[in-house]
Image 1 (cartoon, helix red, strand yellow):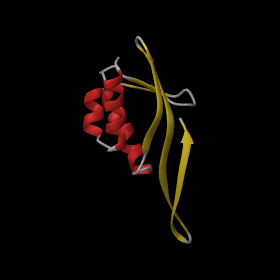
Image 2 (cartoon, helix red, strand yellow):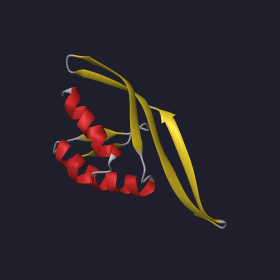
Image 3 (cartoon, rainbow, N blue to C red):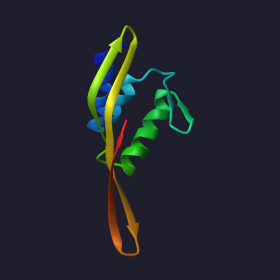
Image 4 (cartoon, rainbow, N blue to C red):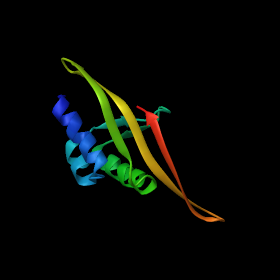
Length: 100
């Protein structure tokens, strides 16, 4: 894996380009979330990204630092987005930004 592919993946996320994300993932791509839940396969991930972008339409990843040593790549920065909710007082939006 090289840094260009990783940065292309992040750019695709930041543009919410699901088709490009799909093409960058392998057939056996595995995503493991912070709770240890796993999604396997680019087809399943395409559905998952569509659902995620529905929840957080402006989801972005901001890279502030990167490190690479052979095949190991570390990216540091922030993830952010807005979660839209509908309550008894109408629509509300909750923006968040966390270290990633």
